[in-house]
Structure formats: structure tokens, C-alpha cells
Image (cartoon, rainbow, N blue to C red; front, top):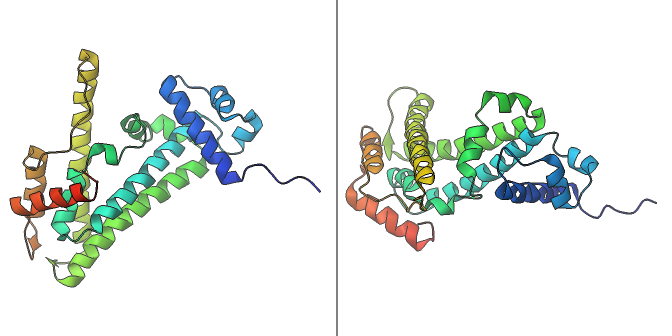
Length: 241
């Protein structure tokens, strides 16, 4: 009888991704190699290729880890005793470090939307990425559906289209704001004065923009400055800000 494997497939995958993250930290997302990952993980190349076929697979796999972590944090925010608009604005008020897994998170996000990277990634990891996105989308869809069902939000026309409109608007603002901050960070790094970004202030421009967006819909209780401050306070109490 053959001896039982020392590590399960999931444990091996975790070892590979932990090693990959370490290699990237030591070099970069561009310069790390599959051989360095194998050496750091203490595994043969054959064992590595059972899980990931190329560097692009590793990039996707690490990004999926980040998305799963972010989704779990978002779930914590949505579970807080707040109104739905306060929960939504709470996502913008989170401490950036609470949703960060790696120092290179934002660069992962940029690479996994690059057409060449997507094409080179194995179908397995592309499918896993799609599934990770769906789970996050479903989280916010349920949140909005419950708001409509409870009467907290008055919806006109098709409810699904209405929910999609609010979610799309919120994500478009979030992604756009992240892109702007990424440019700012690049400039700061180039100038040598980059610092860790603090949580978004309650009266920051992006918060005011979100407030205008959310309050353009018919909420039972519109978002106001008192609600925003209360949300920030609750996030702090739950170690999310």
C-alpha cells in the first residue's frame, strides 16, 4: 500500500500560494519565477504544476484570495445594525488595511483585468475568479433585495434592474476612486513620500458623492451626516476602522 500523502491537495495549494506571495514580496509581480516558488514552497516543479500551470495562474489565485477576504469583511459590515444606506457607505469608510491581504493587492487587481493575463490563465482559475466575483455580487444583491422587501427602499419598475442600477453605480464610484488613488500612490512612491492611507474621512469628497447617489433613491431613512458618523463609530468598535 502506498503511503498517505504528507499534505492534502488544499494544503499543497496553500503552501504554493504562500510561497508565491513571499517571492513576489522579495522581487515583484513581474519578476518572480515558477522555480523560485517551487524552491520556497519546498516542492518539486511537478507538484507545482498539479495546481498552477503558469505565473498568470498564480496571479489569479492570489487575487481570488484577496476577493474572498474582502467579501468576508463586507459581510461583517452588512451584518451590522445599520440602515442599508449606512451599510453601503460603511464599505467606503473601512480601514484599507482591514481589507488588504498583500502589500501588492491593488497591482493584482490591475493585472487580473488585463486581457493578455486573462487569456494566459488556465480555465480552472478563470472559473474560480468568476465564482469569487459572483459570491460578492450576490452578497450585495441580497442586501438590496431585503431592503426592498422590507419597504426600507421603494422600488419602481423591475426590482432586479433597480437593484442592479444602485449596485453598478456604487461599484463604478468605488472602482473609479480606487483608480484615482492608485495614480496618487504611484506619484507618492516616485517622489519618495508614500504613506499608508488612513481610512476615508466622514466628510471626504467621495463620501459626499456616495451620499448624493444613495439619496437620489427613495429610502425610508435617507443617509445623513449623523448616520455616517454613527457608521464610522460602529466600524471602529468592531475593529474595522
